[in-house]
Length: 173
Ligand SMILES: [Zn+2]
Image (cartoon, rainbow, N blue to C red):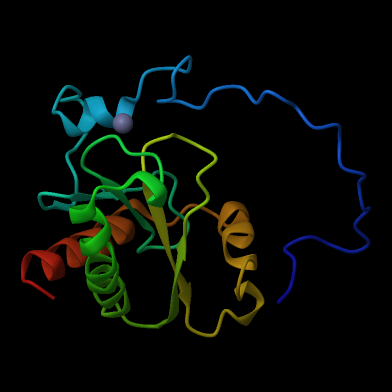
């Protein structure tokens, strides 16, 4: 693993803790959940999901640097694994496996990383980051750091990868 920064880095002391924390988007007291609005079809200016079923919607990312980066959101406003209804919880593993297979089928991908940070919107979502084959410097937690700093991939290449993932899911991969 290699940090995408030149050495030497300077270690910082952690700043004071902020308690109570500010509300996240979609939490009581926070901004309303735009994802719920989009999934309800109230944002026609934005394209719909790449694929969806009764529980899940697979979504496009913006500013993609690694073609094949996508994210999965619950249909319905749930925050985390802890409050997912049983139908979502039991279908989560199978749907993640299908998405992983669809991304791997793009080719030249060593691994598919699944990230669930949970510090952004309070609407359940997980990220899928394909690690390009041979990109050993981006193993483990280095991949999103590298992805943030890489140049944006050509939009047609990103759209082609998304279309292939969507088609694989629609075909029942
Ligand atoms: Zn929501």
